[in-house]
Length: 109
Image 1: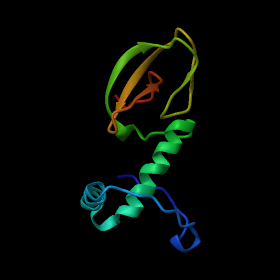
Image 2: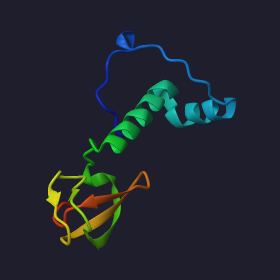
Image 3: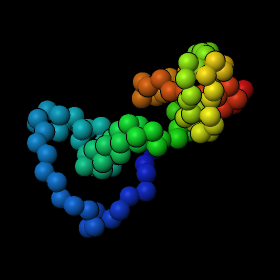
Image 4: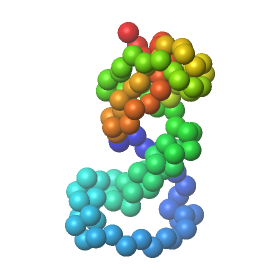
């Protein structure tokens, strides 16, 4: 899992969240040596970036691509390049299961 640069835990605010015991145990299993709290932070940061449109994906995140035509202005999720309406583009399926807009030349051949 890609890790983002973070603030030292001593500088973070403490927030309480209630999790089902089974969920907490599954998160611990998935996190391994990373620790489940760090995993939760990574997941929440990715969610915030995804929802705010800030995320630039590395091309290694793309599992498959589908040819498409833009219906409105889009920004390539790899390069940030503007894709105009009616311009050919790709829809990329990420390792996280999201479909994201890609410019035609954004993926390696």
